[in-house]
Length: 197
Ligand code: GLN
Image (cartoon, rainbow, N blue to C red):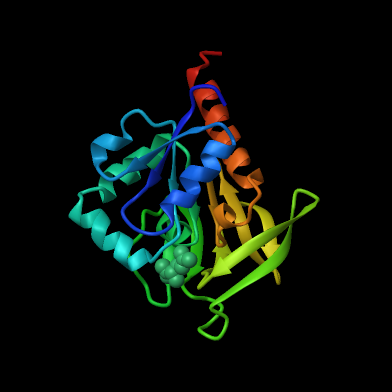
């Protein structure tokens, strides 16, 4: 993917697996811990982890507003806790979020009994393995949201314009398809952004 550089928020959670997945699709990755780290990125991944802890760390590092601004212009891919951060509305319990995607998302939506599961989902006419860990459930999608995959009728992979969100962990499945797809979205954003036509 040429000189594309995609950052991975590295305050908490499984950011290293995302960096490795990006490297496998020949994208340069960069661990992001401060607002200045965002400067030369073409896109950003918000990893899974614990969204409440991430929120506290975002406040402490004064990264909440810079991330919101970043997302106005550049693509963000949120996985699991990252998808929670991207959503407009978080329930169970309610908590602040960046509000960059028109989604209502319920934390730990599968309950405590099902802590984690590996499911087969259909993505673009191909089956894919999806790893769910204390996953949220997307309860509502706005009219501009495109649902790319579902599990038991609930959306699990969605996009809205330049942003992408998964309630599972594509970085743990051994397939880079979804990271490649995000990298293509980032590339597309650059190409369109640069065009004067
Ligand atoms: N349950 C976590 C939360 O609510 C998300 C879990 C994950 O990212 N794997 O933030």
